[in-house]
Length: 309
Image 1 (cartoon, rainbow, N blue to C red):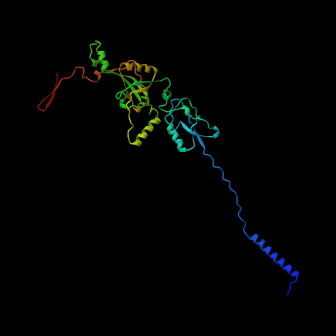
Image 2 (cartoon, helix red, strand yellow):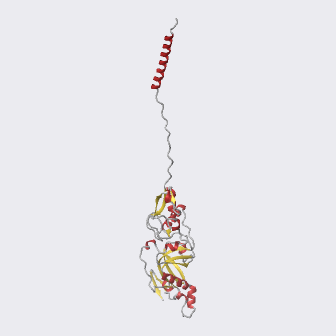
């Protein structure tokens, strides 16, 4: 049976329409493909940078400690040469511990940056001049292992200064026809009281409280006592008049320092009178006076007695 041409065309149109309908329905029923959005990552922010500044007004001679310094954040535009900058917390602590015990060359106002040229570490040129109290002078005197208290005196300690006439000087005085023995000229006198030790030889270690703590901690960690050195000179902080007294006294005899206790540092200084008491040999012993008691012990049965001649 032959189909008419119109029927064939109608059949083809119906099949095409059904196919297109199926494709449209499939497209409508299928889930939409996810949209891919390009994510742009922000560039990492730089770590904030901090500068070391004064937490309070600092004067020459003030020792730096934890209450003296702090860290303030600075902008890149505020950065300039000489600033002590650090972003890492642990490294900032290392900077602080290194600077503790230092002082400043000039007045630093609160909040002002601490630049390298302003700071003075112990042992650096100008440190002694910076820590001297106003109106005071630094004078060095010769000492030995005995006169320096066998190395037990450290920078920052407080001492008395004793002038003593030794055998050589006493022998010279006795040989000048004074009709007195050499022993009568042996004497000692405290000429200065409660003066601060600034340095031993050229070492100022221990003059600041922070350094003393660091030395004690290092000694505890090592399990060994701090190494003691015998010094040949001690530098003292004295008044201009006392500096003259020391200059004359060291020509008259030997000078010895006597260490004062820590608890006495806050005690008011006792001024030495113009003519202070002198301790002579006869005040310490009667061996050389020639006056000795001849005492004989006697026994009478159970009784014990003594007879003086």
